[in-house]
Picture (tube, helix red, strand yellow):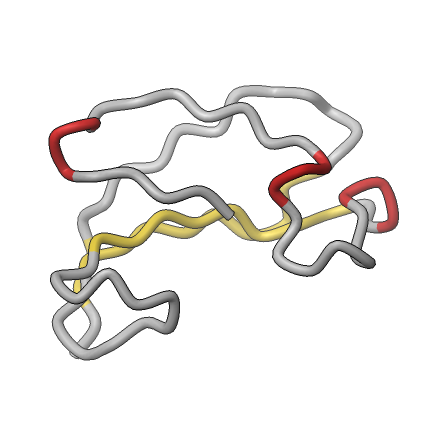
Length: 76
């Protein structure tokens, strides 16, 4: 989990163990993860109607590859 502002976009983020949503859940424990980005007017951690987002599923954690996300979908 990382928090940035619209003014920070575009940006590059390197995921590591310090960014785990829950400290007990290590990235190394999962062969694949979902990587996402969301823009929220409220700044709340939980998504809400009207938020813009992007997600990429089944990203292999062992690949160490760059994953591009384009925030172009909107929650109804």
